[in-house]
Amino acid sequence: MTGDILVFVEQRAGSVREVSYQLLSKANQICAELSVRLTAVFIGPKASFLSSDFYKKADRVLVLEDERFGDFNCEIARDVMVGIIKEQRPAMVLVGHTPWGMDLAPAIAAKTGLPLSTDCVDIKIEAGKVKAVRQLYGGKLFARVVFKDESKGCIFTVRPGSFSVEGYPDRMGEIVPIEAPKDLPEPSSRFVEYVDTGAGEVDITQAELLVSIGRGVGEKERIEEIQELARILGGVVSCSRPVVDKGWLPKYHQVGTSGKSVKPKVYLALGISGAFQHVAGIAGAGTVIAVNKDKKAPIFRVADYGVADDLFAFSDAIKKALKK
Amino acid sequence: MDIVVCVKRVPFTQEVDLEIDRSKRFVATESLAHVINDWDSYAVEEAILLKEKLGGEVTAVTVGSEDDEEVLRRALAMGADRAVRIESGGMPMDGTVVAGILASVIRNIPCDLVLTGVQADDDNQAVVGVTLAELLGLSHAAVVRGIEVSGADIVARIELEGGVDEIRRLRLPALLTIQTGINEPRYVSVMGIRKASKKELKVIDVKELGLSQNDLVPPTEIEEIYLPADTGGAEMLKGDPSVVAEAVIDIMRRKGVAL
Image (tube, rainbow over all chains, first blue to last red; front, side, top):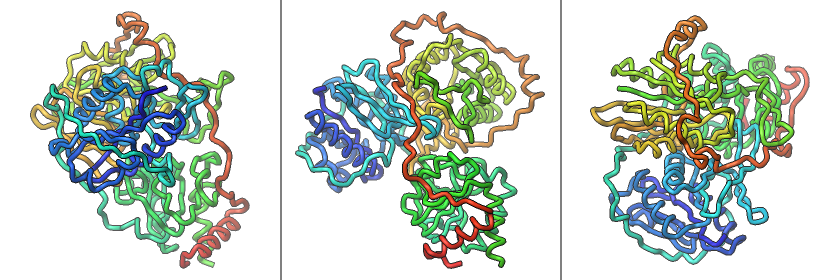
């Protein structure tokens, strides 16, 4: 493998997203292993580029400075990336497994014909062969994925939070301005605005104790029992995605990547299976106590303490103990 | 507005111990119950809601075996007008191959909008939707949790990270990958499914589609499936519920929660 490792840098409203640093960190390691160059691609207005130091983490950054492209446009990003890939033939292309990355990476793959492995938690090179590590069935299993033919390059989307941004060296940081492709068609979609869905009656990010419920609560009618438990404990009720999806609690209660990141002293996870999107939101929690009927629930892999029991039986026992 | 919605039948794996087969490349799913992919059920509901509001017809499509018709019948019972199953003959597929197969069929179904789920419960790839859009030359958006049709455009509410949504305007025809929670998928009774069996369900063999060998060989392949490493993890509190409760209360107090 001799081509560059190409990283797509994601920026939103002028700031480079954390996942981009994580991609650069992993790319840095691959580049060291293969002795190849790390190239980052940045599309956006100049101001947002200057306010960030990510460019130091790449050997060179291809910068498409264009006020028109200040907000992510998938078609523009796709066409720019496809142009670069065709011209420079990178060994690998890394994109974040984010809502935008999930829109962009398959589009690049379809246009270039390069193989794609998504939502990777690791990328390895074993005996000259590229291997992607990813999860199946919501994290119950892992799979090592190989490509039929990676000789022309390959594309990965990388799960946010998979790689540490600590302790990787700076690189050359050469800035190379690039032009938008000349025949760029008028995009068929355009950015309108951002909407914050986070505001609500309670602020789960400030709570010292969160009593959090997941799918295991079973039905809306029984949430009251947990609200009572939270009252007795002096905590605040939060929840995982399925509870909001079912309309049982408003979105401002939701913990996780598409909800809020929380940092309580104690996080009591009741009937939460522990999907990675949820777990990412409790990284800042002091102590995690998980209660789940399923002994093999992934939440037990990240919790400090676990109780393999029915959450209502557990809740009743706590209430009873505190009444004494 | 005519809509095509793509669905997949997946094993139901909540509170199920999954078994890896001897080749270590497949999961033994034969004995498991199967359901419609969670994301797809929201996509079907969204298609039906749009049809109820704007008129038009909904076609549900899947790639798979006869057993997979179960999810098409479910979509028909929810309100789809017709269904198409593409018989895959049990060949190995990944998201790219499935998208290629779907594209060769959907190309011939006149429609304004194509909906898929964001991803499937089993392989969690999130590849089929956007790849299909590109093959069909459609405008696309991923992870959509709200839709409004406005003239020749569709306005999509895209779920970004950290409680922020992006509002994006796309020209029709378009493809959107649908996020869970966008609506409340309607209840389907056994009777409803039986009634829907009168609706058209067409079967097309993948061999009839004129796809090349190259289109049908998956560009990715699973080398090995394995269980997560059993390291670290929670200290399990065992015993009578009252004993466990006392232990948990004690932990909370030690960690600084005032009780």
